[in-house]
Length: 140
Length: 217
Image (tube, rainbow over all chains, first blue to last red; front, top):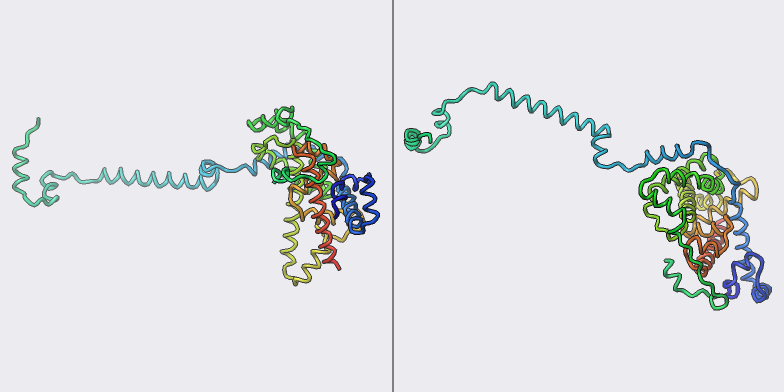
């Protein structure tokens, strides 16, 4: 397309071309063809003009429903609100209860150990030193 | 991109230089609503939905010509507005911004529909696929019944070949019937920039039409 048309394209397409543009179009086949196709496109674009319409009643409620569905989930919501999070919490609680029960029961059924047995079970290399320490130990 | 375009002198600038009529999109009543939504006020969002639902629905229906699709895409448009209004920077009018989102959603929908169709048709040979590209309508899978349908089909195909920005600008000009001056006010761009952008978009549409015609013959 030549400059003389390019510069005034919007006016030319609207049908109110200036004298130089009209004179050029009368003599230039290339520009005439391109302008004709662009006018055709203009008409085609206008076919997208729809009648003034409105959505069904309750549109806002439906939009908000969709927004709630699309709202991004935070990491905390993932743990506290999703079924996965609830299952994870239940499993953690079950593990804690079992572990607690084990600790309490192992404490209750443990046999009392004599101090000498305890010392001997440590396996110190020099028993005499330990005995001397025990004999000389005084409460302050 | 727009900054670059503004530095390119438009040929007609010397002949009829026009300066942009600056519209301050930050101080309108609408901008207060936007700020309230940005602060999390859902009543303000409801006001925006009430104000623009018919406009958005009509635009979508104009492109898709199907009530259910228009309802679905309109809901999606407002959902997008809700989540991305924090990024609205008041450089253009709210209507321009909403218009762009609406047109984008329509063409995203058409593109996805087309991809689904192509996946279904992937068993065909490349020649068959090319013939379908040239002949199959993008909106309605059935053959166009009259010129109006054929035109809408063709224009949907052509518009899918240009960028989202160019598409919304040319639609604001030709479908909504805004003048170059109005477009400059709405977008916050220079009138000459608008003219350059429109010219380039028209050229792209012309080339896309030539390509489609070549495929058809």
